[in-house]
Length: 290
Image 1 (spheres, helix red, strand yellow):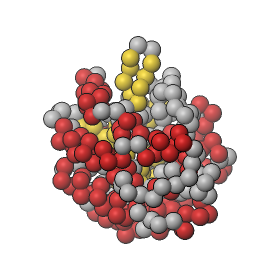
Image 2 (cartoon, one colour):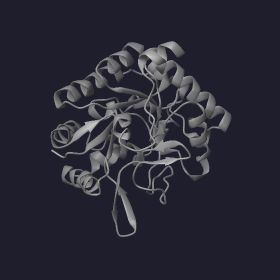
Image 3 (cartoon, rainbow, N blue to C red):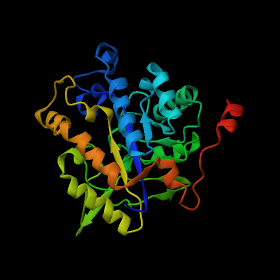
Image 4 (spheres, one colour):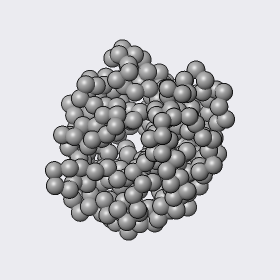
């Protein structure tokens, strides 16, 4: 097992909240769908306990509001609660004022549900891009201490190809970009979501080892619905359906191997090793503030 602690993250959203299905599943209809979030999240929590790993759960505010007991359970098991926006809305579909209201509302309700400070944020579908870079300043002003939204490679919904590959401070806010490996002039994501299900495990392992060889942590991201091969099938383009349903049965066995091969902690715990990163306030400090 590597001596480096890598960051493990779970984007806590249900299968019908995925950006690709938004044209067919309006947010106003979310309450009409069978929810599988508790069942699938409990499976993930069991796997994490078996593997002795901790993770950051980037939680959609709508989920936190509907299932506060689930948020409390995640936190009680020693995992971190962070924000994934209230309605899983792409940043470039919001104005700066709308974005500020969204991250403020989500932070408050997740803190109320978990009893802990929420200092991390991940944008839906990596929608912090060049034209939405203003979002990082708003996050800092609203009390967030790190962001994990930038994909430093080409991506269907954005990406920032010129951004650095490893954690860094951006005007006082820490950024933990998605992990990539460099081949020539190109970068390739490998460590989460559809990439995790598409690539053989040997490539994922090699990518994380390459990060470790550069003395840097990797970040892995998955979703509870990726552990659910029997989830209901939704309408969408053939390309989006292919990416969403690809190799769902491979997620759990790959995840088990991942937990046995590497050491994982929360995003916040991994960032503590970087000079200048300020960790969250204690639960006692939060209780005093609230």
